[in-house]
Image (cartoon, rainbow, N blue to C red; front, side, top):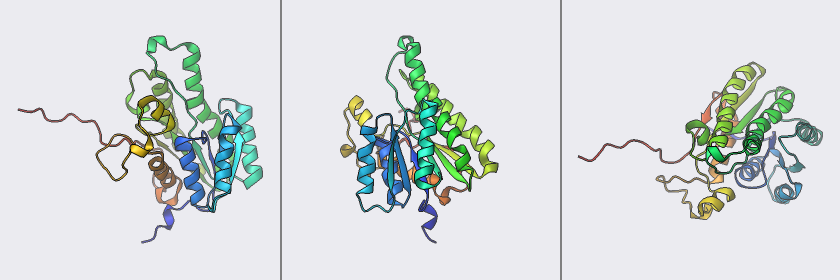
Amino acid sequence: MTVEQFHVDGETAVVTGASSGIGKSIAERFADDGVDVVVCSRDIDNVEPIADGIAESDRPGDALAVECDVTERDAVEALIAATVEEFGGIDVLVNNAGASFMANFDDITPNGWGTVVDINLTGTYHCTQVAGEHLKDGGGTVVNLASVAGEQGAPYMSHYGAAKAGVINLTRTLAFEWASENVRVNCISPGYVATPGVEAQMGVSADEVDRETVERRLGTSEEIADIAQFLASPAASYLVGQSIAPAGVPDIKEDPEI
């Protein structure tokens, strides 16, 4: 038995929302594996340090930073064009760009609802559709980032949960349509992950998460990167249209005490 099937070496990947947290970890993990990565964010100043850090390290993969608002079709087309020009094609697309805020459903304005849906769902649509012709050229993989909020719902995050549920359904539907094009589409639906955003909301940092402890409900960005690498690798060749939900110890109904 070998571990070669778990490598994504020699590929080119686009990772959206890569300025911090999960996107940053995925980009760095891919570069560690020899993948050339294009990292993007709405503000180039936030993502250039990520690309520079990869390029200046001893990682075998190279990196390119591109400014891109995934809700703007023209910007997405420019992102994909820059990727093809720099690296010659696209083999892996990671749709990680996302945003949310907590609010009671009655207090969510049309603008707030539209913004969250545009970034999380419509942005995934734009990036996947524009990158599609390149992914189909020789076969490729799409890894969408959703959320357990899209699987189960979440109080005060109805807009986010609805958008992520759309991403999960899009994953399954597109996986069927694109299977004949030799493109695998899968999804990761994380629970709470110790990203900068979660730290700001919950006051818990990644430094406080013990990766050796099984009984926990908060994960790290690196653990999500582990799954992204697996889904993009040949080892996941029989996984198509699936949503993996890493969320730590599950909530279950325990037997009542008698």
